[in-house]
Amino acid sequence: MVLHEKYTGASLRIVSLRMGHRIRWTAVWVLVAAWFVAQAANFGGNAVHLVLLAAMGLLVYELLAEDAPAT
Image (cartoon, rainbow, N blue to C red; front, side, top):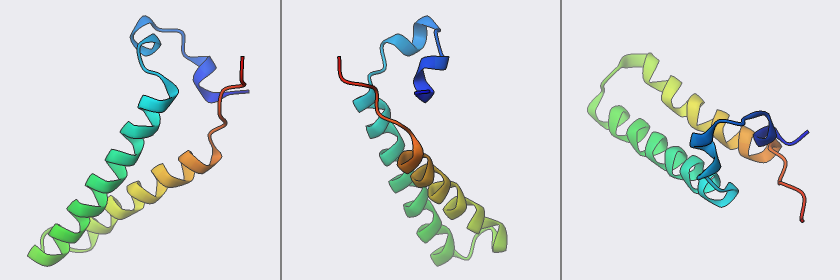
């Protein structure tokens, strides 16, 4: 089952698979940059590593998400 087929809301119809891919990759880069900044500023202690964990989670989702079948 393709993950995006479960959602039928009108708000998700305007988001293409390509746009979702770009949004996820942009979020990954922003989270990694925020992690580096937080490390450099010594902000957040050990909890700041959760930001990097979130970025890795998005990457794993990107690997496991199935593409829509060609029509």
